Amino acid sequence: MLPVGAPEGGGGEDGDAALRAGCRGSWGQAPVDAIDYVITHELCHMAEPHHGAAFFELFDKVMPDWERRKQRLERAMA
Ligand SMILES: [Zn+2]
Image (tube, rainbow, N blue to C red):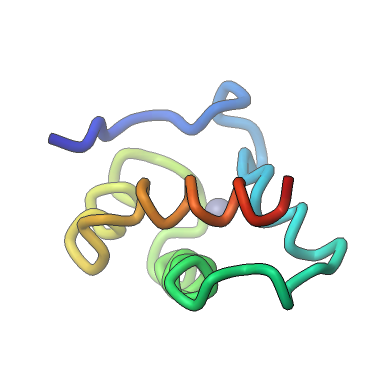
């Protein structure tokens, strides 16, 4: 079961620490499935600009294992 709700950071403009970390570089260390996570995340923003319930509903639908991928990305960026 994946929790669907607000992202860490209290639902601000963009709670994606991992995405911001990605912008700083070291993509070479990111596993391919983590890169897929970022791309899919951004594609979901085309339909849902904010991190509301609808965004995570859509994200869960197109990428059910996104949380696992996000964790891999965060580990790769650490
Ligand atoms: Zn986002």
